[in-house]
Length: 88
Image 1 (cartoon, rainbow, N blue to C red):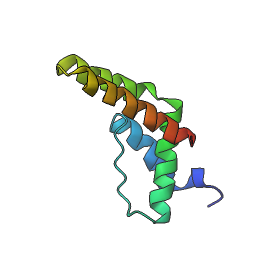
Image 2 (cartoon, rainbow, N blue to C red):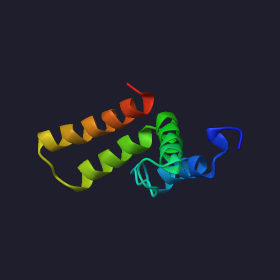
Image 3 (cartoon, rainbow, N blue to C red):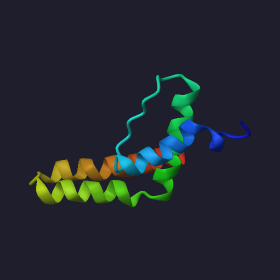
Image 4 (cartoon, rainbow, N blue to C red):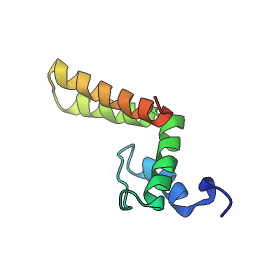
């Protein structure tokens, strides 16, 4: 295997981001190589498509009346996920 990008877990992580609509669910045990590689693939998909997470947060707001503080929490989670993927 020449690079992380060739690893099956990396490709699985990228696909999982879209299948689960931005919800992070890593199937590999923490600390394993596969866990880290899956996370890299998922994070790259998030970095290139952060609107999925934002779009899902907006759907939640639309269908469930929420207090302003809860809406702010959703925005902050989407922002944190994006910043985490950038390494900030």
